[in-house]
Each structure stands twice: as structure tokens, then as C-alpha cells.
Length: 150
Image (cartoon, rainbow, N blue to C red; front, side, top):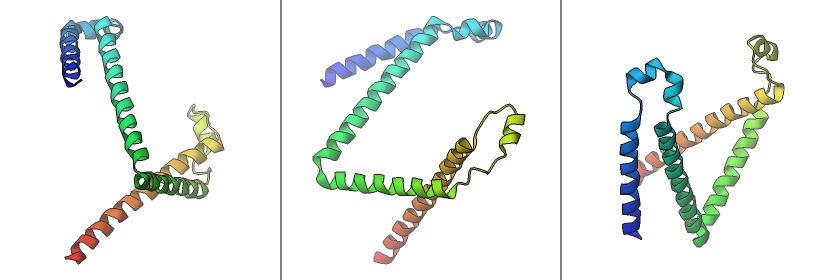
């Protein structure tokens, strides 16, 4: 299996190198940017990128789920983390007002929005701040605990 993966990676690397040399030059790109963007080599390189990204995501999620379900303690920790995240998201939603930005101002700038959209954006910002505070607090607590345990 390991040899097959190595051969596949070398083949993809060679295909990528060939496609790299088939890309339009800078002068060609500046002369015809639309044509350069629609270049077949560039499209093929994007397809290879999407393929490799999909493989990486599938294998990462697969192994993570396998390890999570094979260890009951790990599954319990994941459930606590998910519950904590949902609680933080609920608090962030309650804290967002939905009136942070004037809907009329947004409409004047050509951006159509509603109060619920503004409330969700505020929730996302509040959730970011809450999770940042939790992360910094966890780092400080861990450092303090490590300093005082010796």
C-alpha cells in the first residue's frame, strides 16, 4: 500500500510539473487575462488541488472518527467539547442585539440585509471573542499550573 501511495504521489507531482510549464507566461497573462484564467493547464491544476484536498479531508475525518469511536473516553471528551461549544454559541446569540449596524446605512451602500443577518454576524463575532477568551484562559491556567506544580 505504501509503494502505491508513493507512486501515485510521484505521478501527481510529475503531472503538476508538466502543467506548471504549460501555464501562460506573465506577458500572455497581462495581454489576455481572461484567456489566461481559462487556460486548460490552470484548470487541470485546480482539479488536482481539489482532488488532493478532498483525499486529505476524507482521510483526516475518517481516522479522527475511527479513533474517536474506538475510545469511549475520547468520545466522552468530544461530547463535552461539542456541548461547550453549543453553550458558547447560545450565549453569543443571546448577547448579539441585531441592531449593531443600521439597515438603512447598509441599503444606502448597496448591501441588502436584514436584522436577523446582522444578529447572526454579531453572534459570530461574539462567539469568536468568547472562544478566544477561553483559549487564552486555558493557556494561562495551564502555564500557571505547570509553574506552581514544581
